[in-house]
Each structure stands twice: as structure tokens, then as C-alpha cells.
Length: 253
Ligand SMILES: C[S@@+](CC[C@H](N)C(=O)[O-])C[C@H]1O[C@@H](n2cnc3c(N)ncnc32)[C@H](O)[C@@H]1O
Image 1 (cartoon, rainbow, N blue to C red):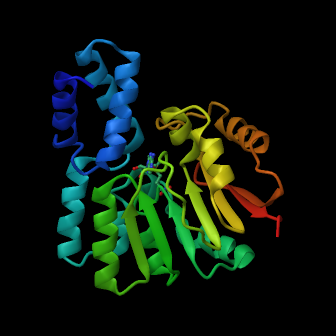
Image 2 (cartoon, rainbow, N blue to C red; image 1 turned 135 degrees about the horizontal axis):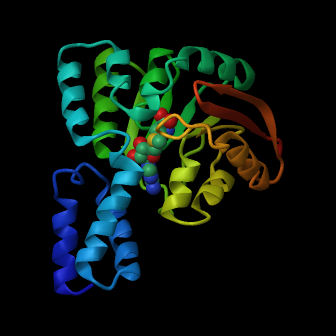
């Protein structure tokens, strides 16, 4: 990187919408954009668009501030969950986890690209470690869980890096794999194969953000079957509120 590019990266990392993201991930996205667009202005715009698609679109900067206010006022967990697009679209989470816990019987859950979802697990008394590149979400979950006395902890983590992943009895990859594939072709399949746990819960949206049914359920289910890691079988499969859930079991022993 030359000096102008380094300055642009620093500015991007410290900008209002991106300073709560893992700086290494912002750098990765910026470098990818620079490789595609020789013009710095275009690369900067492409990086901002990509960062919006992978993180900002789900939990906006203003919502993080609102969530902190709710936290200070001791609001119920549902009020916070409603601020993140993914948990907002999952009002039946108690029922979903009831069904999954019955089959997988986990004692500990690892939630990859967790958003605010570890708050659901905490409310159910399930110990959970959540990882996400969005420090704003990580801090919110940690603050709420500490106040509630829940066995939940989150860390800032870029899943496209090469750090070894922590293992759990049940590993969640919810509404994640297509987001990773968009960042780097093959990254979703690679994560699915290297995640460590006897059970893995993956989910996919079945409708567009505008609510249209354009065949996403069949598309993502076929994708999953094509990328099922060796020795894995589907233990459960269901659709709830425009989300396809597949519980995988690693039978490798
Ligand atoms: C669609 S949301 C899903 C959130 C949560 N899994 C759920 O379903 O409630 C996608 C999440 O992936 C996170 N994310 C995207 N790319 C990531 C990466 N490379 N490493 C870690 N987290 C990532 C975003 O910050 C966001 O919280």
C-alpha cells in the first residue's frame, strides 16, 4: 500500500460507521477492493458498500446507540433483539432452540457471526461463546449478559482469518454462509468444513429482504447438500418465519 492508500484505510477504519468493526476485517475488505479497482476513490466506495453488506445492513450504527440506551434502562431482551435484522426476523426463537436442544442436547454452544443471538441463548440459561467482527454487537451482548448474570461471552473475530476456531457441542452458523461466500468465494463451504462440533445448526433466508419468494429455499438447500462435509448427516430440517434451519451431525466419532 502506498501512503495515500494507507491514509484512506485509516480514515475508513476510524469513520463513524466502521470504527465498531474489527480493524483487520476492514483492512481485508479494503485490500480486496484495491485489487479490483485501481482508482482509490472507487476502491474506497466498493469497500464501504461491501462493509455495509456484511455487517452494517444488519445492525445500523444508530441502532447500537439505541441498544445502549435500552440496556441502561434495563429493557427486556426482546427489545434489544428487535434492533438486529436477523434476530428481529426470528420471533419464534424459544421454540426453535427448544426443538434443537432436544435433538443435540448441548452443554455449550459456539455461535459463529453471532450478532445479538447469544442473548437468546443466555435467556435460556445455555452457556455460549459468540464471535463476530462487529465489536458494537459484541460489547452489547457482553454488557447485557454481565448485567443479567448469564453464562455468555462474545469476542471480536474475523471468520475469514486463519485463527483456529473454538469448538462447542453445538456450533451455530445462522444466516452466515451466504454472507461469507459474498466476501470470498468458497469461504462459506470452508467454514462449514472446519467448524468444530458434533452438531452444527446452519440457517438460510428463504425470502428476499423485500419478502419475495424467488426459490431461495431450494437454492440454499441444494448448496448445503453439495457442500456437506464428509461424515455429516442432516438430523433435522424445518422452515420457520422465512428461515430454513438444518441441524447437521458429525458422525466421524
Ligand atoms: C445475517 S447476520 C446473522 C447474525 C446471527 N448469526 C443471527 O442469525 O442472528 C450476519 C452476521 O455476520 C457477521 N459477519 C459477517 N462477516 C463476518 C466475518 N467475516 N467474521 C465474523 N463475523 C462476520 C456480521 O457482523 C453479522 O452479525
